[in-house]
Length: 257
Image (cartoon, rainbow, N blue to C red; front, side, top):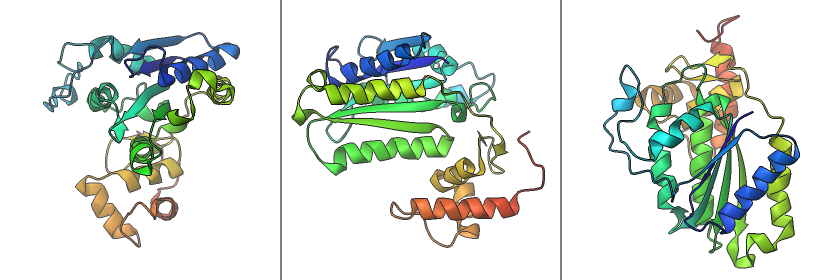
């Protein structure tokens, strides 16, 4: 298993970096050594220009020449990706948000690099106990990963309770998660969305994709097949309903092409 760790904080010994390092120690405890790390502060990634050049054949990747060119091959090769970021002004810090916006080239859905074959670990550190900060940031990644089929684990640290380095239970939480994921392997992609090229490991993951997708084709599918409009409160119920519908629509013996 290959792991990529992206640290977004400019503080090399800050809380997010400390917890990311503890997670890596857990992987190493269990024998994992294929781990690549980058500091987004030292390997700067600029904002996406929205040119969509990366989505046009021959799909050579992002045309912007900056730190993303160094990180992108490691992201494509990784099975497990770690995003470690502080919360600034109710959101992930600018370094992390810039990288997330630049993930456009990874939307090529080829079988080897498909995002649904990766797992994301999100490490968040925040000073203010405000659900409109850390909770909304976590929900953003829940939406992203459910849309693309990735599995997600989240570690939160309330910095007002002390430095992560001084909290053995918080360090152990991160290290234990690393040990538990050391044997994780990418899942087979056995289901395909009939509305786009994306592939998924299960009907449940495909259903979550339908709920989170916001383009007009998927919105029309939801209007045609579901009993309610998607809101923050009914995500789970609608995902279960979508899974039931997809099972009734699925041709016998179908597999992704």
